[in-house]
Amino acid sequence: MTLDETDQTRIKRIAQTLSEVSNLNETDMFILLTLMKNSKITNSELAKILDFKDGNSAAYHTRNMQKEGLIDRYTIVPNWKRAGLATEFIILAEAEDEEQLLEIEKEHVIMADEYSSTTGEIVVTPTISGCVILQNVYHCFGDKTMAVISGRATSDQDAAVYCKNYLVNRYPDIKISMLLNKYKTVNEFFIDKKAVTKLKELFQIPEKEETSGTLEKLQGLSSED
Image (cartoon, rainbow, N blue to C red; front, top):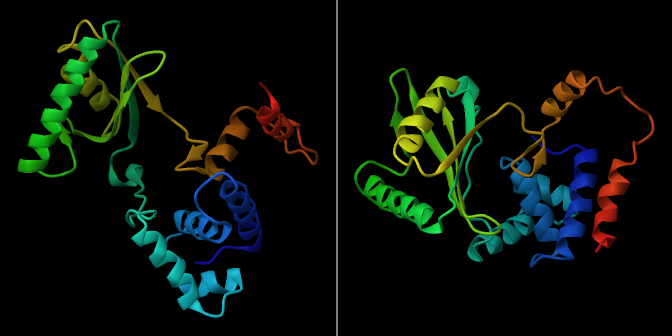
């Protein structure tokens, strides 16, 4: 599946913008963004879009980015809802005392090390009626010291059970908040058009021929102090 002309034009525009402030030239950035959108695109298709002589030229750029570590690995994006893990959750763990949170993070590092050595690299926690799979664990520092845990669960209840049993009950002095994600308007860097369409219906946003001025406001942020 190749990109249509609209997608090509938009990705080229974004690649040009990003190349001005990143370590990649416009061509490499375009290839990188295109592979992120559709990793099954062939070198021949890339060559045609970029006016290269043949697919070998596109492959040359891709191999160079792999050698430089810019492309870490190729993977897929599963539809977790269809796989039976419909609930996507985010847990925020906040502590007044930084040492408390560091202790939790220390325990997590020990757990991750032992788990990967004995069980595998994907952390699966069984619950009574299903399971929870951890997706990301962030250790954040800034205005507040916070741990952020995201993952998938077989149900909202399973996510709540995990949050209560593995965090709230074990760390009573830590402020724990759990959020359930219902929509992603931006998913892995790309706007989710299906989610946007659903939310437009929810908010009763009419189709307009003219823009609302939102884009101008976003672009104006770069000139503000």
